[in-house]
Image (cartoon, rainbow, N blue to C red; front, side):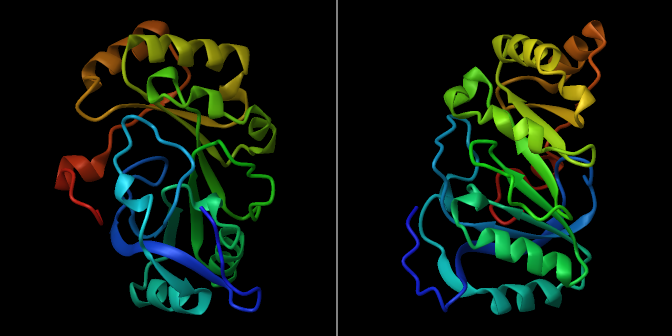
Length: 221
């Protein structure tokens, strides 16, 4: 995605800003304001936010912060698309932290996270083969994670699970931070994944998408 905005105009292309319950990761169930930025260089076959690949509207940082404040919610999640595809995302993350919010960033793991404000909790994907984007994993990002960050692996089938087990072991993921395994909605049965995790005694947390259990595929939830 190309940003053609003047250097003096700190703006981001935003798909939506909305208030909901966090559906994934450590803060699941918490009321959260979501800032969904437009654009993503990946095309995961199971992506459920393809509507954020294009469109959206340019908004300056003050306007984004102002809308977030209207919800009077401490937790803010910056997501996409791939939010780091827009360079000004780094400014937004810092500004949200400066305003006193607890901020998380949902990122694909394909772009460098080294410049992300250290106050931000990074929820970073590793793409399994079933995503169609396994070659895009930027493995050096693992060294930029801290114990307060999280790694998320979305699994479509047993082959993805076996891949995740190998990466968990070879890259010693659980020693870096919390690891989350999630089934692709409508593709892999949650109970089946749960049984695999228990049988293998994996040091991970399983998650399902709470927002889809509550609201289905509705955008803005």
